[in-house]
Length: 273
Length: 263
Image: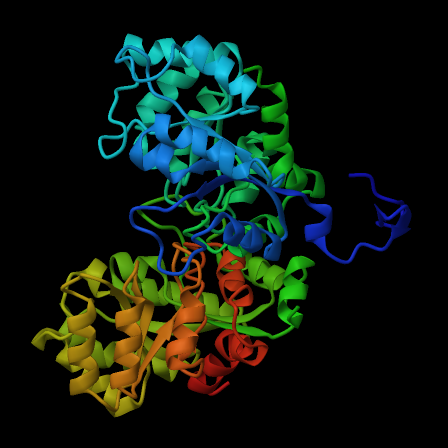
């Protein structure tokens, strides 16, 4: 966003003095789920409208969203739903969930990406853990999917609790063009994360749980802002907390803009489904 | 829009001189914490608008409480107007309890007892812990305990037993029986007038504080950040973004703790 020499921002055709950081920083959430969860949070929003309202209250402009049915039921059930339920909501961008191809539950990776393109979907989530879709990432089957995702530079989301760090490193190194985004990476992960960041420039993490004191400051200083993507974990978490993590981080204004939304925007722009 | 919410969305330090009842200090054996020194913590406090934080060093809660209390004392000496000390005690060392309290309280800056029975592995309601509760009662010291749902050391049953047996001790349940036991924590507040809760949790559950204030009011809820384990900004945001009255946010962020500590 352009700024005037006095620190103002363009609004309604005139420069005005900046009052809210949240107006300057465009927040784009990479970690948001819609749909009825099997175990819903006690108080979080349970409708798409509620999610949009919660985002607006926290100053979040857009979110990349998966459907609970894609994660908890089956991608073939939820992927169509996320497109339908976000069709008239410009602040929500659909994200699909993928499976490896050999079992025949999903189209081939090439056809899957063609369907993504037709549905204007530009990101994919994988749920490989035993409690979710239960598939190993090291097999030729999974590699066939990852190869196509990497060739097309599709941002690929995996919950940090669903993948081992050794798999993260192996996949990121084997597919250096694959933007691998780990969700819900906790504040206790730094010792493990930094060597992975050093080894693989295509690994990124989402920030909703990355809360150790100074974690974002140090991580940005050492590895650059492009490694970090703002996320809320809506509907489970209070989205304002994730916003405050970025707004109050001891990093430059440019870096805040990248973390808040610029990085995700760029990764989605580079994707070629 | 509430005044505090407007300040936070502007990225400014809040104007309410926050008193943070739950903090630590120093490196953790378990994971890397970038900004864990007293000076780095004070810088983060200034950035967010925290006037004081009640601390107990990681050395004390993970290992040797006396060595750790020395670290806490040094931080207080360096920043006397910013840190309030919690005397960490360990029920496995009954012979040290009274003397450690004497030593710390004589030098000022320490105003409460901190117990981490989960890391030290004792049960809050065990016989071994009785000398600590007796000293707290005798000296009129509040006790901040680590509380965790489902834990035999510091879960609901342990906390209830202590609250019931020691009605004169002000018992603060750190984390409010996290990760999801806050309704039970509220039940303890409803049942026992000596119980208070704090807000510190990494899992920033949507609407948790709205629920707690709606059920038990704001007067017995204290803000806790758990810094430097956790960055204070999202922890403060948990209060600021709650759908509760502005005056209740200010009670949680400062007034309740200030009253308890005699600030």
